[in-house]
Length: 345
Image (cartoon, rainbow, N blue to C red; front, side, top):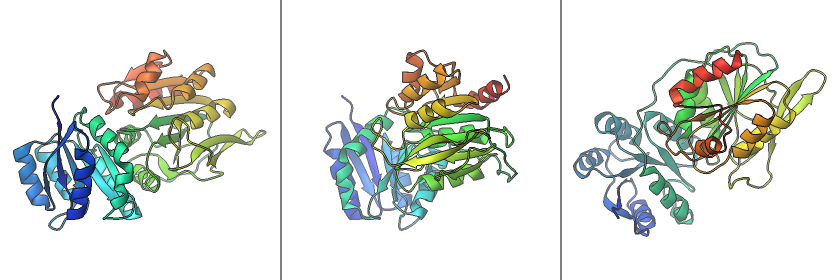
């Protein structure tokens, strides 16, 4: 079997060894080179043509983002970023996804994180998973959101995604008009500390005002809420008489091995919401969202799933499609238009 050839770009020599030890422990992965310098990385990547590059954000001669930007412009390559668990690190990781990185691995305790060994199985699985997909075209800036008065929503679009989801969601939301009159609920599997930055980036690249969800946020028109990492996002009735709905953040156990879970948000929405529901399942590993879509379908909602060709990982969409729950299966570029079509039916 052909091995997955990995090139490591990392400022810390110690972290180069940690990453190499983790990945080379698997017989299907081969480390073909390492460097701490961005310019040297660009030269060696062009020569060695690795299957995957792991790229540190902080390098001595140039930023990791600049390396990524130049690499994707000259030779699109599968890139996984390494980023610290900080607000700045989170913002940089989201920016990297816009520039074409496929995913990122958080450094749990800063730039030198020896505890990365604790996530060995997850890191190896991610590298193997991403080795099967094509490098993605960088995200293109669209438009700024506009502040405006909002009213309680009677239509909701709920979006679920995992691996490859941040870019897919940005692509989708950037094409949505500012005045759809709906509320968006977004559940993206993401490590703690990254969802606030993701929501902020969505606001800049979307016509819809986006924020990380908080307890008691009302479901309002032309607003999007991103589920907070580490907590389920549950929809409840805020006022039965006025038909208003709010969010509650729930710290109950993992569902489908994740928290937040798409199934929790979709299921709670189907249970209590009396308006129109459109569910969208995007790229991701596993089957989270399947049971939520089943409940939404039973309530008369519409289900849209991303097609295999435009998905980074065709897991979550495939499960929904195989169960016969999807009203349509579309490339990510066609999903915004279909949402608008369903909203006006």
